[in-house]
Image 1 (cartoon, helix red, strand yellow):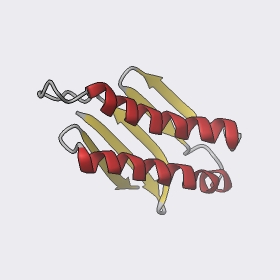
Image 2: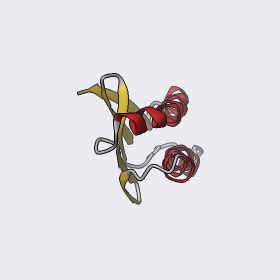
Image 3: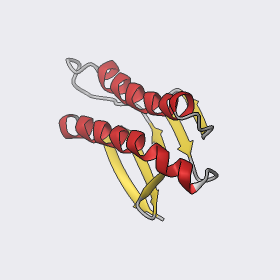
Length: 110
């Protein structure tokens, strides 16, 4: 299962962590589709923040793992990232609606 952990501070997304792989037991379900969609949505968000907004965020990425953190950024830069981050969350929750056995999106307020 893919676990998505969103962390908010004062309602603003300040970090997220995505870990795991979709591991369906049904052979007809294409796990590459689920994992590929999750990767595309999350990595496009990181690219948008870095390349479009020109904000150097802290992140680590490996197979089945993405940890992204804005906590060292200014409040202004965190605010500028919110549209991309909220859009990412909507996309991931959309996948969760269809494939809830394979992805869980959780949010924590700190």
